[in-house]
Image (cartoon, rainbow, N blue to C red; front, side, top):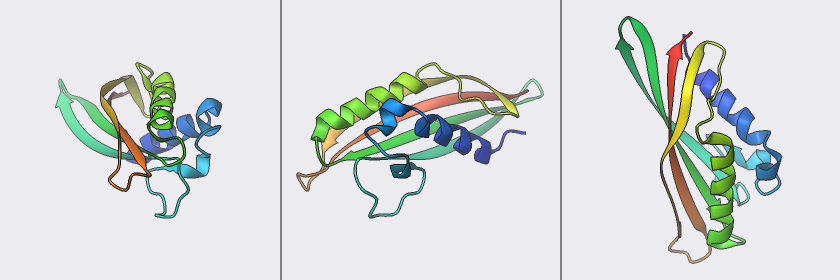
Length: 133
């Protein structure tokens, strides 16, 4: 059975172990829940899980939304972080023990300044498709 805990752990491991990314965003500033005072830049992520039963098999569609915040180098740093996430996520299965991932596919991304004029934020939306193995 595919569990959300497995998917969260696989994603956290992938992000936190990619040195080009952690050279910019410390692994302590990457997670699905971070304290409000976490230093920028940071990456948070959220999940939406949708299950289907097709031909007697359990399938799961996971929508992963990445939220990026940067203060120092503005939109340039936000776009750089987005590109690094793409390097490790585009069309690359997010492997877990109890299910087969058929791939991760980007659906949308953007970057823009916040109203405070100091913070830039970006978001990326990925879809991962899973089936029980």
